[in-house]
Length: 423
Image 1 (tube, helix red, strand yellow):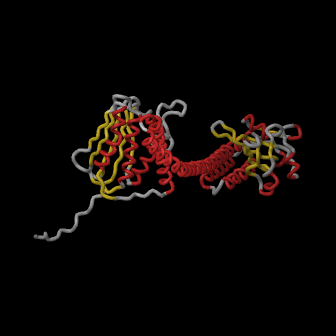
Image 2 (cartoon, helix red, strand yellow; image 1 turned 90 degrees about the vertical axis):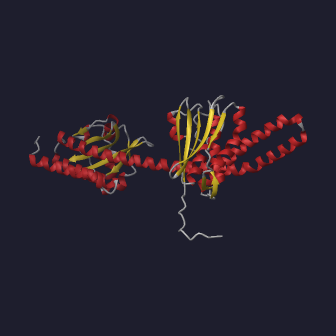
Image 3 (spheres, helix red, strand yellow; image 1 turned 180 degrees about the horizontal axis):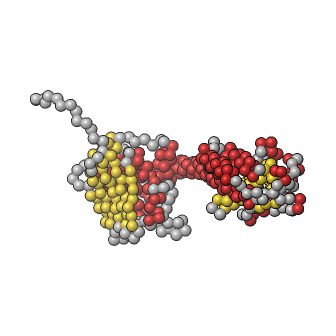
């Protein structure tokens, strides 16, 4: 066996370096793999070369790159993992040299019959990425009836390593695209569900509440308890429908901010008053700290009321008897700082990044102690962001949570000075 000269080694290294450059500059996977098999042919002095990729759905190897004149013939051909040299290499993750295929049963003769080409010898190496075999690189028929050598094997293994990276990267990209399509479809289905549910439930719930209230007035004290249960639970369903409607409006872009001069202090006081009876019935101290200033802001009062109500309701829900919930408003340099703090059960650190996601619940549906659909906080986040603000939560499990949102203050520019009017 003739050893390589220094000039040959240098030439091989230069050509391999060009292939490495192609890993980042080739316009697409097919062009890069074509470069790989061309170099495999030249550097091993072979007649042909090809790259095969494992097809998970068919559990066999498929031709990924080959000579142009074999493209149409070999593209649909599946190479079995058993009964083929490529399959042997793929299954074992080891290289293989067959100097005379007539003496080896592992040669898959179907390809020769299809291409009208006779294979005499072959060398094959696995395409490996992080210990995972993703395909096989083959070179066929060493020219001049010569035998394949360890040097040929080393060259192909280098080329195979480059090909494996490209194949794996493209495979991951395909999976990412497929997953993105699936997620988009799931998002569409979720959006449709929200829109249909909120629309279809609104009318019957309104009728239930209206008739139940009417019957309570007529029936007298004898049926008060039963009718109050109907009204209370129908009201809970109405809140869920309203949250669903808010989510749908935000998603479809129908939500609009109707700005006017409003007092954040008054909104906080109204919300606190709304939940005061609930807090008292659960032995929770509900405090509102707004200072003396009205804290005027140009905003949509209804949407800020919804945002703050959801935060207070959430804090009350996760605070045990004897606990405290505090609503606080502070004016800073260019924004209002609105917070709702509690000393309740807190939120596990792993769940903090997801608490504002739609339908996310800290508890699983099998072990839940608290109600709700996981919409309130996502609605609050949307309402705050519609005003150009931002919201976050600080929490420690077992010690409580503080939800804070900032609302920008739009400072009006002072008008040009004018002569004072003298009455």
